[in-house]
Image (cartoon, rainbow, N blue to C red; front, side, top):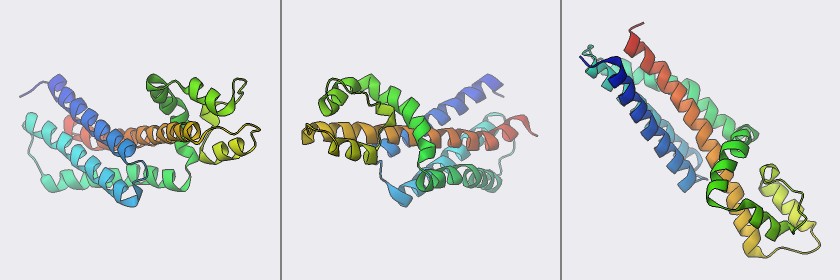
Length: 190
């Protein structure tokens, strides 16, 4: 029988792989639509089930595949599905994560201030965290000196990446909660 630290280590490894795949899906194809969301949810059910099955097999508990898949499917449907639906119908929910986690991620690899100065000028008072596609178009239309299309496109790409990182972070948090809902009862035999 494996000790609980080994079981938890395996669970954390599986969850990290799940979060990484989720991050890649949201950032490689940011406008993936409902089909991509179904792929994300299926991936979360599979990885949550894999974590639960691994825990049960490592602790020598009897394994019931149907119950494991059912509990993981229900937890994902009740936690992750509403989160993804909220991101579609109320995108402002994801902006909080985009403006924090997304901003930090973008700032690691890009000089946001340099791009902002190219678009809005040296005396720019605009905040990158307050920009989305609609506000960018509105603000650039009101400028006296129009930015180049290349600079505006670069800033728009950064804004979209910021929003994608925020969405993937929120869905990853929901996936971790859904996975824990199924994982903990199998570990502690409630």
